Image (tube, rainbow, N blue to C red; front, side):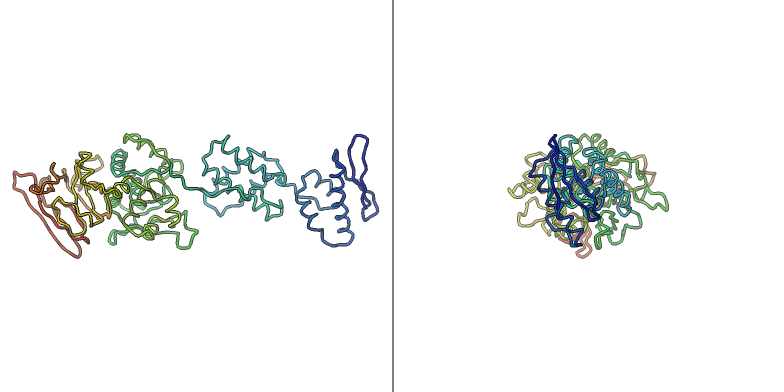
Length: 511
C-alpha cells in the first residue's frame, strides 16, 4: 500500500515499499489532496501489476500515456515503469526526413519546409510527448498569422505534420497523434482560377525570347503538361508524328498503376511549335527543350517576366492555370474520360481543381453567338463550319462545334530561320473541336471576312494573300478540294462558297 505525506510547505509525497523491501518516494510537489489521491491509486495498481505479473489496467495505461515527462521520469526512477524514450522533436524530424530516401526531391523539400515550421514553433528540444492537440491548433494558427501561408499551403503542411506524428505513434514514441482531426484536405479555390485566352497566349508566345520558351509555353497551354517535371522530361523519341500523338512521362503519378506515362494528341496549336523546334534542333538532339534544364533555373520567374513583356499581369498558379485552361477547353469538345487521360488527372480532381466556368459558357447559354459578338465588338473573323454547313453567312444554331479560325497576323521572320526554311504560322482557334490547320509560306498570309457579314447579296469571303495562291481543304474520308489561282498581277483570291464535311481535316497551304 502507498501513503501520502504532506510537508510544511504544502508539498506532497507518495511513499511505498517496493518488492525488494526498500522504501521509495515520489515527490509530487504542490498539488491538491485530490490530485495526490488520484496518483496514489495508479501507483498502487502499478505496484500490484509488478508483484502479480498481471497487465496494468486500461485506465492506468491511458493515464501513463498522458503523463508529462517530469512525472514519467519520477515513476521510472522508482522502478514502477520502464524509462520512457525522451525523444525530442528536432532529432525525430531530422531522422524521419533523412530516412525517406524513397521520395522524390519535391516531396523531400515539402518535408523539410514543414520540419522547419514545426521546429520554429515548438523548438527542437521539445519532447514529442508534450505536444498536445491544443498545441497543434496553436501551430496551425501560427502558420496563418506569422508565416502568412495561404489556406491550402497551411492544409498541406498540417497534413505532413500529421504524417510525422503518425509515424511517432507507430514507433511507440507517443500514444496519440496531436494533429489527428485537423483539416488537411486541399480545397478548391475559384479565386485562384485564371482562364488564359488564345489572344493572351498568342501575345505571350510572341514575347518568348527563343524557340525553347515557345515550346515550353505551348506544351503547358496547348498540351496540358506539368511544368517543369513533364515538360523537361519530353524527348523527341516520345513524339509519334505519324500517328499524331506523343508520350508524356509523369514523375508525379508514376506511383499510381499505369500512371508512369500517358499519350497526348498532337493538337494543332501545339504541333506548329513542336515542328518549329524540331526543324531548329541540332542533329541527334535528345530533349525537346534543350535549354533551361539546370536545377537553378526558375521557370516560374522567367515566365512572369515574359508575361509582363507581353503587356499582361502574371496570374496565380502560372503553370497550373495553363493546364486548367486547356482541360476546360478540351472538356467542352471531348468525353471527360479522354480529357483526363490526356491531362493526367482523375475526373474528381479535374472537376474540383481544374475545370473552369468561362465567359464563353455564359455567352452560349444566353444565345450570344460569334456573329453577335463580332458585331458588338467590331472584331473581324472568318467562320469555318464543321458539320457540312455551307459558308453562306448564316449561323446554324442547331449545329454545335463550330471551329472559328482567325489568322490576322502578319508572318514575321525571326533570326533563327535560315534562308530557305518554311515558316509555320500560328492560327488562333476560338472554339472546339480543334482541327489540325497548317499555314506555311515564306511571306504573309491573312484570312478575314468582309465588313458586311450578314448580307445575303455579299456572302463572307476568305481572302488569301501570298506570292502564289492555292487555298486547299483536304479530308481523309471525304476528299474535297477548292482551289483558285490568281493572275500574275492579282494578289487575292475570293472563295464565296465552301462546304466542309464534319470529318474534314482542313489544311491551309500555299504552294
